Length: 450
Image (cartoon, rainbow, N blue to C red; front, side, top):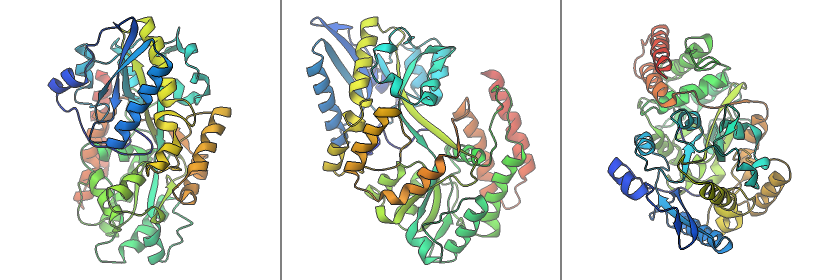
């Protein structure tokens, strides 16, 4: 699954939702050259409804074209930047932009269906490439060849309400480190009454499967084996995840009676001050404040309970297989300018974000290494406008966790696991053994077809 916004500081709303719309508004039909210039089409421009982000994006393209007067950039807007319902159709129909946005989990699929340009001969021209974290670069490297460039990353953690922790007699500076502690804290928070829920989880629209995966990683388990051929959910770790959810829901009554929740439901609960904890990435925090009524000082972030692993995700850009060498070189220059220069560009201009009331100082996973990372952190710290101390536990704890990407065929697998999680949360007598056994067989079938 993706994180919630298309940039690290502000959120936006908008969508290219049908194939017809994608083909006309989001697709690439631009000529390679215009007036002697190299023309490239790019996507993931914020929609007009996201006025501030749109303004920043346009400003950065204008400054890029001023510095590179031989390049013409044609941007297509979309939110979400990639719609899973139309992504493959755009690829197959030849409608994909020259430089196009992808989730980490898309990389191998796009390569497997022969729709990605091989960037290996050109990547040395990307000034920032060697400064990017190796594990992120590896995501876009298939069979020794480079097919994409990472742009952002996220890792899951536990968001919690410090005010509710204090009211429940819990220490907000010592968040739960194990699932047993999460359960105990949730029970105390729910006991406050007045409709307060201790812990909430997703269980619909594939989001329940996504969170089951994150919780399984936190227990040291996995969804599929190392070869990606067999399911590994019917294990002690998988049982522990579901048993814990069952016990919080039915024994403790700390998850509330309303279930089949999705991300917006849970964010609304947290923003209104009625929820103690839920799993999320750091970029949920500004949404909770700007859209759901929350307060930065009340919101804190801890590492994934369990201490063994956390789910990471993120995004990057790949290049259309039909892109010419000149277009690839131009696209790489554009990526450097827009996203990969510490302290500058659409993602790195923290001073500009702060000036426009964008949150600066959220604990995103570090994209860069070495001097580039030091520069990025220096500029971020200088412009921080959120209570960074509320996220220190998350930063410290992540250092000791195994970072794991989503499984292959993630959305199909999440759909299967959605049914497992929703059954446990809506049926007191749900048979966990049977649910996991059935899910394992369905996942094996998915994997056998890929």
